[in-house]
Amino acid sequence: MKNIYQDLQKAKSSGKKKFAVLVDPDKLRMGKIDKVINLAKEANVDYFYIGGSLIVNDMLDLLLKSIKENTNIPCVLFPGNSFQLSYKADAILFLSLISGRNAELLIGNHVLAAPYLKLSPLEIVSTGYMLIDGGVSTTVQYISNTRPIPADKEDIAMSTAIAGEMLGLKCIYMDAGSGAKNPISESMIDMVSSAVNIPLIVGGGIRTPEKALANAQAGADVIVVGNAIEKDPELIMDMSAAIHSVKVKA
Ligand code: 1GP
View: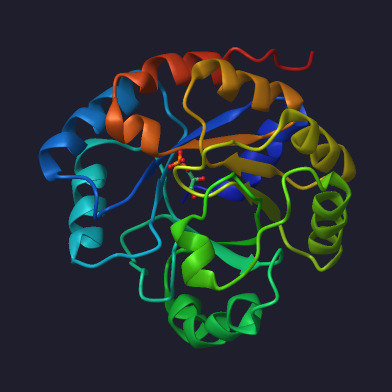
């Protein structure tokens, strides 16, 4: 059995960067997913993150089945709510929305999901999820009923991440939200990654290999890209090459 978190910690300590392709089961037609899977295999993508704020059909299991039949790339659930669970994935980001003050998303939903997850074969990766203002109001902001951290408040982002680490969370995920106009700045990534020792996942509005590379160089350990790849799956190749080009420590 793979240990996804241990592998990520090992990569972090050697300076190796990981690339996650985010797939929203609702948005991808099955035809297009075959192309994404093949390109991801070819490009040595590290993870599929699976999720969306709204999943309105039964595509989740179908999508996981299709990925599993075709590749060994680990599938990590990135659930928008506690209905988005499936035993067919390898791991789940057990998200606590620590940038917000909505008790349901800090602990409430977790209590409801815990018995299911306890029995599941999924690897549980507790994750402090921080929404950062990306210049547009995103679905996750609306659904979560929380205010994101302002994009220029690096000290708030840093303090929030430190608190998350002190509470024992295993990862921090800084997200400008899917389709953000402004992705998270490199200076915020730098400040947060320097302040914590746990792996830092960064996503939201990353559209170019240059920005993906800049984020990795600034200290992101996992770069997540969804929208841009949905629009142009071929982008997987250049994104992956850029992220994996970051030099590993000797
Ligand atoms: C959203 O971080 C992810 O939660 C990815 O965002 O779809 O904008 O790449 P994009």
